[in-house]
Image: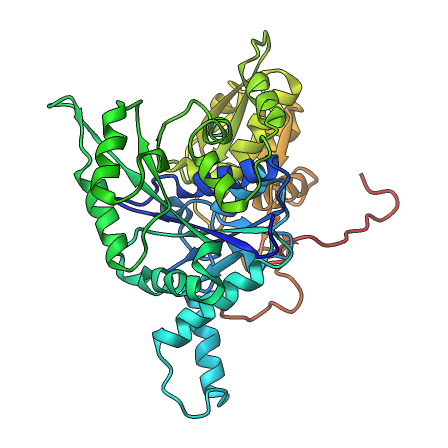
Length: 441
């Protein structure tokens, strides 16, 4: 590769949740398979400072990085696909940048100038991109939301301006659009995708590659039609329908014309080594003769993305142990021994709030009574401590998060956090050294 760092920007059109995160991670995986050092970043237009207080039932899980940053679930996809340990710099939210801009203005750092979205916020976004790109040959940036959303306009403008900062030849724009299939007319409709591409061009960005997402395989004419109306070469329009597993996407991308676009952009014509991904596909497809059912005791039952890292970890463990995994969702507000009897193991994931807490304690108590395997994550560990204390004779044992008047408080608010009214940023998060006392079990 040349000396200039390359930047790949992944945007989305038509609707959110179209698969930008998986696309970005898969492009990164293909580049890694070509021997290229990559970094990756998610830019979200939310006015939240971080993802720690976002409702997981609506937004999906909060993924915590090794330095304790509370981020979007897409960073979990990035880590799983790319085997990278990410940090705060890999997650950029409008709220965090605006908070810093306002703090700088109050400190007089702008010398009395008018602080504006352009150039100050767009400049801060570009600075954050360059910071996250440090140490890599290619930096991939996913822009959250949909092009045209009011809250995301500053990010779209920032990545347009960025080409002027580093050179257009060092920027590649990938636009991911959705093409629906209309059952009544039995045809794929490209008009929403055409409009999305027109909107992106209206902001001054002509994509180098278009990824067309569909639920099922689409005829070749769909790509030709999108190319005709978008101004993008037909061989740079890639059809990507739903796969049985997302871990097949890097293989699909490597075998598609995107790889040719990436080769031209990076100057690296190495054939991607996809052995790792082929091994994963083999592990997934292997026929196994043993079934394991894990009961997931949870209160957010409507959106599986709430616990996506837990689910993906269970799947990986099942492949490694060569068992067929069945996940049974158990409602923390209603489940009891009858439901717990039907599974081989229990898992209580993290969470907040009093709703469902009694059911989670009941699950831990059941595991202690029966010896059934139990894994408690975060709050799941805390309820196990409460259950163990109660079985040891402290009948009213509880956590002061849920019962401030309990005479046997076995889970305390961390030292230094007492009396704080702020909810965000009050947890111990990320990696830290823990030393077990001698005799611990």
